[in-house]
View 1 (cartoon, rainbow, N blue to C red):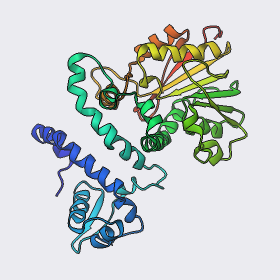
View 2: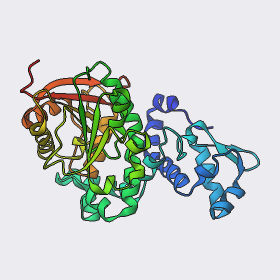
View 3: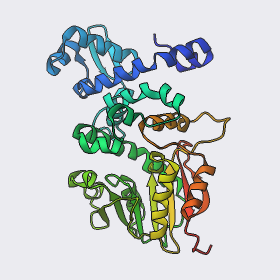
Length: 351
């Protein structure tokens, strides 16, 4: 019988052991997704031999992997070597509306797995960005050169967006969008976030500023998929150099990719393009005080490995906004507490 998290929390020794062996669980999960086992069980219970034969896997080792997936709660194992998906396992199906499949392939895939081994050396010498240490180039440059990584990365960003868009909508529930005619999502990927707001506010038109390689496939763009193409424009551009004029700017999980100097440059570029009534919403995992354990404090270590960025406190975001020419207006937390929206206003705007 699997140890419950409540039991782990109650016993310090079990908690430490759980941390040590945590990677076993995530790698078992990754292998089950990568090899197609999750999808093979989509329609219901199947015998392990049938699954391994269909997928071209070794029968004995494949069964052991299926059994391991059962041990971590992704599958149910029955006495006759038959397996089916648990409710948790179904979240890894490609067509689940809140799928984690692409997240698993990215975060436990070869690139993101490899960069973590550099963490001790980075902390010793004070130089972050394990992607450069491992691959000799920044993550975005790696995506431009490696089509497989780029595909997994872009799909994972869209997968993350389902949760993040809802969090942003909830955090901004009481913001008055009446005066907003155009909203620009800077580095907005396939446009999931801005399209979420276009659906909620029919009078608003949207712009997505992205790299050409991200928006080249029209079938992946959310505006086209949701029938919003007449209200949403995709623009190829460099957010460090120029952004389109808009009443409102979104930056969702963008500033955390970059160091302070780089983030200020992005924010300054937007401030120069903003009208007098312009606003900017930075959507991030804002780091709370020392007394609060929070996902942002773990994500911050991932960003240390992945690139030049970091997660920040509300005070640190305020400093970035002020340095870039914006007026800091405060933080609007999402109800879940996981994410928040940091608000900036053009200083030429009169309250």
